[in-house]
Amino acid sequence: MNSNAVHREELVWPGWTQFAMILPLIGGVGGLIWAYSQDRLTTGIVIAAGVLVLVGLVFLRFRSIVIEFGPDGAAFGFNKPSRRVPCDRIVAAEVETYDVARYMGWGFRFGWEARDRAYSIMGHPRGIRLIFDDEKGRRWKVFVSIDDPETAMKALGLEDSSEDPG
Image (cartoon, rainbow, N blue to C red):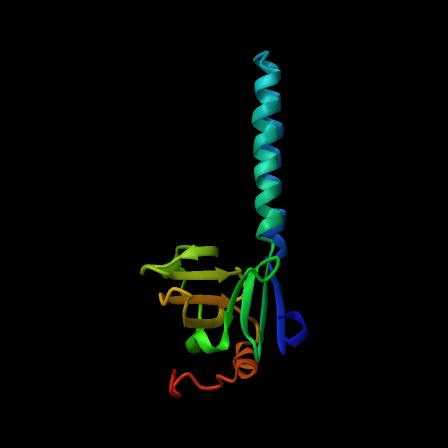
């Protein structure tokens, strides 16, 4: 979809959240100190390394949301568009404000209903809720954080959600 994308955005987490990733590092160092004081250095190294690797992988995997909306449809995902929805499968779309209570946090989240998901980034409260059918005919509702949802809707040719969703 890259060559035909009309609207593309990449949203990253606020700087303070990236700074907060240092806390597990401090915990890992604390674990090493504890292990050394207990003569269990091997155990401490394994625990600290595990924590640091896990935090690093999570940070690298979920550091940004990339969205592409255009005549071919919508594509979105963390770090790169991993979910693609052709225009002919989109039933409706509307600009919304992210409902933290519905999804209980930020990131890749599950909603209250089956097949209700969110791709959200803290600090980017607006986005688009897409309602679409997958290849098996199942109906999905997905919220995607976007800084300029109106332009993304225009790129899809869905400027007004009150129009006929078919």
